[in-house]
Image 1 (tube, helix red, strand yellow):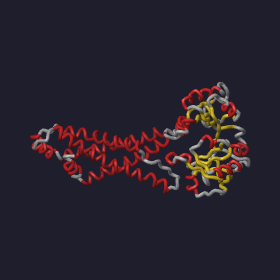
Image 2: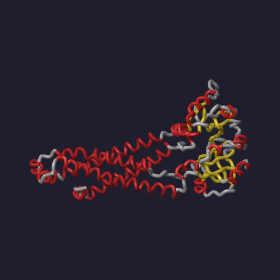
Image 3: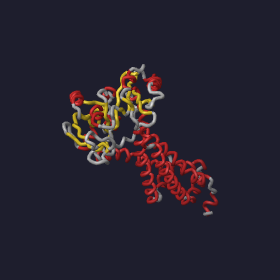
Image 4: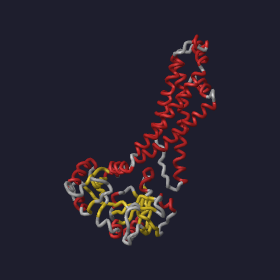
Length: 388
């Protein structure tokens, strides 16, 4: 802090160059904040406290293959299983294929295994009694301007109904809300319908189940229970693979896209470019100040002090741009979600993102400042003052 005024003056000696560099750093960490939030959101899918108590059983071959509904009673009788339910992927879209929504055909007791989803008791009762009824996430209701009691058309991108078309009609009878708002992105954006109605109306399903969800009595016995469930269909034409809900969700996402790899690749390219840009800025800044650095040595600044001044300048440059970028990402996320009406659901920039971001800022600052700082430390006073 003793030499902060000196570092600050040197940092903004060339204001235009410094401001342009800061804008580049800001853009890089703005992108980092938004993309890292998306990555964390995918990584944390299914990792709720309740999710640890659930196992998901799907086809061993692929998650798009179905299983016989006859497995329901056999799984329910497995030692360690408290309750079992099931669901099918519906693949719904509203008005046009681009407006895809998470939509599932579920068993009557599906919500019993998801206590983190809040539904008004009266609406739940209406849903149970309405064959074509659906429960819709609060976010989707706002996104499309739907209201309870409204009849809406949904187009399935996969399954036709009994008339041979892929157009279905449903009655909105209730709204689903996440009890924990921090984990509301998934439940807030989905639709559930009756599996029985789906099965009877789709000529291709014929009693098949997409996957099973089992509540376990003891989370510490989850691995044993998962193996016991898979043993039920061993060596059959419908072998299963059971895993915790978190692992199943991660596996499901990776079959569609490896979010971590995509985000990591983008950020790797961005930060590599940032290293070159910021390194060039610091090299130019030190090269221009060689006589001044020689004067500092002449009046008593030691080699270590000169090294520290250049490194501090480099780290401060990256910290200013990086903090502004992450701060802008924290503000932009909720704004994008609100403006898009939930179409773009940006997760908040959390503590983990801030800590990782600050670590990257310091590391990048030290890395790009290392060579110019070492050069400044090794300056020969006579040669530097003579311009050699």
